[in-house]
Image (cartoon, rainbow, N blue to C red):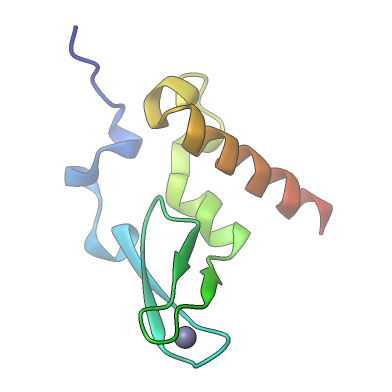
Length: 92
Ligand SMILES: [Zn+2]
């Protein structure tokens, strides 16, 4: 069975600016490129851990934030990251 992703997570429907965004490394200031489903990346310059903001992470996942099929769609691992980010963002 081929599982078809819903349009909200279909990369071919996203604009490049929605798929890739840059966040500056807090340690050395280098721009770190994040793919839309990345939450944490290592800086290519200094190797420091760079985290995407919760708000941007949630926005990038779009419909997965509320979609009932999100867990199957993006996978349980990403889903738990998303869930954590959502909880974090509600705390503030
Ligand atoms: Zn750095």
